[in-house]
Length: 585
Image (tube, rainbow, N blue to C red; front, side, top):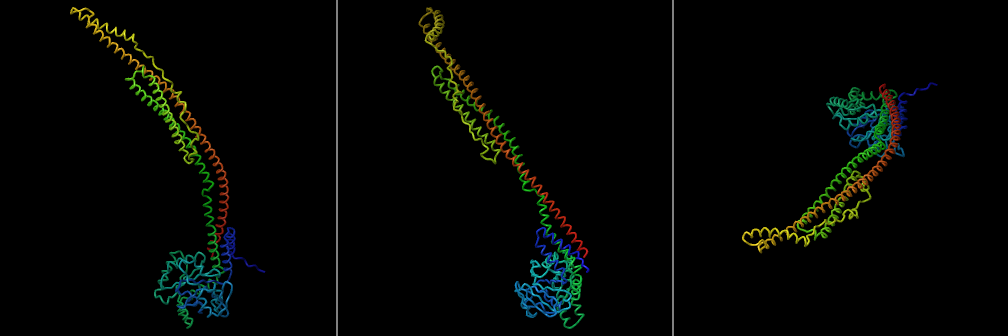
């Protein structure tokens, strides 16, 4: 027994079907299986499409010379109608759950409606005896997929688009032909109603040009169904030839004879390529997305960026802290110096008139209070500046908010009294009664002597009332001048003592303030270093975790990429086989 070799196109189609199943496209696999069954069927399925009024149903009637499809104003085909060979005329309406047998005449009314899935008409015609099967479809609607017009019968081997010769192909018809060409390799444009168009030849030429410009290889065959039917009634061979149907019928007969060879190879190759392209498209997208940075890599990049940011902040906040502390030391010293200078100016004004001998106690109490107030104000400003500096440094950790600030707070010391020692009264030279008497005698002696000598020239004695009076005046003046001189010395001594006392105060308070600033500097530095270390440790941990996840993700991505690349290579090999099969057709 001789075995029949399996056609090459069957192997290609089966391999494409298996590839669709492997990649989870059961819908495509089902379509390829249906295509395989249909291509192995010796019957040639010819699907006739066309918009309303283009002579589509009349074309089917003219091909078989039988009024099987309804035409005219009463209505045309609303249900897909399959016309095949039969020894006796038969009609069958196929519903979802039942089949109804009718006569051909009775079927026409049902075909106009849409109550059935399809109608099957059998007529005894030699044209159909070789396996040619015609399918009349409802009128196409622009924008609607062409295969939705076919109902539930097998895919098409050939598609014939009926387009009236009264006008060129429309944009909608060209779009329909593009849609058809993706799955059906053999397409014919039947230019109908040539009997109504005197310039049908020019229309046919322009249609061929438009098809060529659109990259479509459909043949254009002008026909006239009216002439064909009239020629069949009269037996006029010349009129039949003029109708153009012999060319269309010859094309169909050649396709019936060559279905198992050229047509089957071309259709199988095209169906395989279309299905493989649909399988490969999402794989290419997955390959592209797999090569893109993954979430794990994005997290790693983000963590590394955060680590770099913490390190940069570490340098910035240290510079800010050091600069602000240096400025604070200078400003605090200047503030204290300014306060003490104002105080000394007040002291100078006070001792322009006040006598330290009588006002010292009150003055010492006032000076003590002023110095304490200056120390408190200076330290208060120091604390405020330290708070401001802490907020300035914490701003470098902005996203951590208040958590970046230290929990402790600085306060003005309660023992500032120790920085203000009591001022000692300077040694005051008192002007005693004895000193006044001696000073008066010393001044009066000179007066008596000078005036007495002058009056002696007049014959008066050395000591006389005039000289005694002059001595008394000069003695009183001497006592007064000496008293003023002693007051000036006491005021100068008080100023000098106050100056030294304020200088001592300045040294003590300045030293204490600088020590406080240094302490604040250390506390702030240690706090923010600790905060930086904790942040850095947390981010380093996240970097390590992200690095592990990224390494695992990279390994998984590489594995997926290898699998996708292998699948794409396999699909590309099948695609090349399908191309070779089509080129050999």
